[in-house]
Each structure stands twice: as C-alpha cells, then as structure tokens.
Length: 474
Image (cartoon, rainbow, N blue to C red; front, side):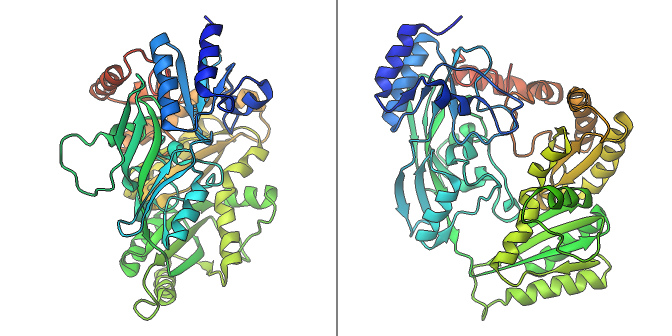
C-alpha cells in the first residue's frame, strides 16, 4: 500500500519550501547505508529546521499512520537509518537541525541540536576551551542525534565511556508529536525514572531526538601515543593492565590491530605505511592524555615507563613513539582505515561484539578456529577497542571464493561467532546497534523477559508503530 498523495502534499506543506525533497537524485543518498547492504525506497525526504516543525510533521504522520525513518548522518552499519524496500516509509533527515542552543562553560556542558556533525561538536567544545571526547572514524559526517540514538562508542570509551555516559539531557519528539523537554544540565536528578536513557540507543524507535545537553571535559594539555608490536592477545591484556597501573587515569585509548589487517591497510589505503622495520603478529595503538601541565605530571615520562617495563616483561617486541602531530595522525590512519581497506579484499562479514576484557584472548582463539573450520580459507581480521572489550571481528572472504557465494554464509557465520560470544557472557552488538541487520539475532539470543520488557515499552510509547518500524523488533 503506497502513501496517499494527499498526505504527501500535506507533509510538504507543513515542512515548507526548503523542508522537503521529492527529487530522486536528492533522495538517493538517503536510501542506502555505507556498506550498501541495505538499500530502500522512499518518495519523500523531510528536512525540518526546528523542533516545532518536527513535532508538526510527526503529529500528522501519527494521525494518519504514516511510517517514519529518522536519519542523521547515515553512517550507521546495521541498516537502522534507511527506509525499507516497501516505499511506505518517509525519511526525516535532521541535517538542518544544526544549531548551538547553549554554551555553559561553568557547567562544562553544551546543548546542541541533533543535526550538528560530530567533528563540528569537537570544534565548538574547543572554542569553549574544552573537549567533547567522542571520536569515531566517521566523525566528519556522523551527527550528534545519530550518535545518541545508536549509543556510539569510539576509541575513547576506556576513559570517557560510551555516548550514554556523555549525555545529561535530551529533547525528544515522541511518536504522537508531543515534545518531551528533558534538556537539563544536571548531574544529579533523582526524581523518578531517568527518561532520557530510554531514547539513548533506541535507534529512533521511540521518538526523534532533536537536541541534547552534553558533558564537556578540560582540554588536554599533553597527549602521548605509542604503536607497539606484541606476540598475542594475552600480551595485549597484560600490557593494558600494566599501562593502566602506571598511567593512573591518563590512558584514554587502547586498540589492537592484527598483522593481516595492517597488510590490507598498507596495501590499499593511500598514505599508509608500516611504522616498524619488521612484521609482527599483533600491534597495540595506545594513547595517554591529561589536562595537567608537565610540571605536575610529565606524561612523556609516563609513556616511557610503560614501554620500558613492558619490554622488560617481554610484552612488547618493538615500537615507535611519534615525534609530532603529523606522525601521530599517520599512526591513527592505520586504525581508522582498517575497516575500509577490507572492501578491496572482496566480501567481508562483520561482527561488532563485546566480551569481558579478560576473555578476549579466549574469544579470539575459539572464534578464529570455528570460522576457519566452517569456511576453510576465510581470513579473520579482528581489531578494535580491546581496552573496553569491544572487538570488530571481521571475516574477509577466501581468496579463491566468489564474493556472493561467500556473503550468503553471513547467517551461518553469525551463529558460529555469536554462540561463542554468548557462552563467554558477551554481547552480539557492542556499539553498532541492532537496526535491521541483527533483528533475528536479538530474538535468538536475548532472554524473553528482556524482549517482552522492550516490546512493552515500544507499544506504550509508539502504539501505532510508526517510528522506525522493523528495527530492533520485527
């Protein structure tokens, strides 16, 4: 059943002349996610520029049962921000909702609309003499609303937490068009349920986030990075503990990279080179930072102490410490480009899992053996946020296998990997969400009590199921 043309015209009228597009060329980028695994159809994209416009559009959609797909920067990786193939869903893009509402230096907060690009949020914080510590590979296009809706993680979770930990307040347009104003800068508010937590990580299924009050932190006055070679994941965990013990609270990032991933990145991505003279099985990219002046804490000495003790203990074989910002950025390119580089190696079946940090070596050993047994010749490329237990367990196709034949094995390999994750007390989605991709997996692994509670919340807030239907739940 297609959307009534009269309803389309009414939505266009509410949105205003600059608030919509029916041009297929304009709509086309909104229809597919970055991997192009999910490609949908829609005849209308709405571009509201105020909360009042969003409210009016949603209220009309609710009254007439029109399904809506909220969309921010469209950088998600689970198909949660693009329409389905039915043509019965309308996209609400938040990109024009990009104003700064409030800067509060003394409260260490800023209130931004949800269409503010994450990199711009960093610049706004810097203008205030502070930092907003959420950093992602897609920060040049990802938007604050999408980061919140997906409960984004990134490289600094080890120290600052996920997006849920960085949000103090929200403004949300509910599925019936009502506006919930929870834009508080309070760090303590014990007056009943913490309603904002319902919408963080809900992937647009409970409402449309239009603004957020975010925590800020003192600017870093020192930052030191190191790229080191290690033998195995067991050594990585021991190095992590050593680094945390020596650095106190200054270790902010700790990423693991496998040799196969480094080879792919150097081979396919411009400007990437091997930082070390000899190849090693695994690498760690770690970073310490502090807002203290060197006369109070010499962070360079802290990093030197970590590396000295790690080498004495046989945890680190070789390493490099960048001498300037350019060299630091070059090292981080090896991490940031690792996922993209895998595109050039054919099909890639990706997993975003988390297990307790202590169980990562066990997971990597068991999961790698299991997938190679299931698909001989498959090439595991596990990398990512080992410091907080989140591994991107990506599987590149066998060299001599047809890409489409390989990608058909995605459900089977999901089950192999996710069974091991579950047995180790982990999560099948650490930071990417459920979207469309993992709906069946959530049903399979999530306890029925959990699912019932989540469905009950969805039915209560969105009884007509117009808000991003089919994501998280069927």
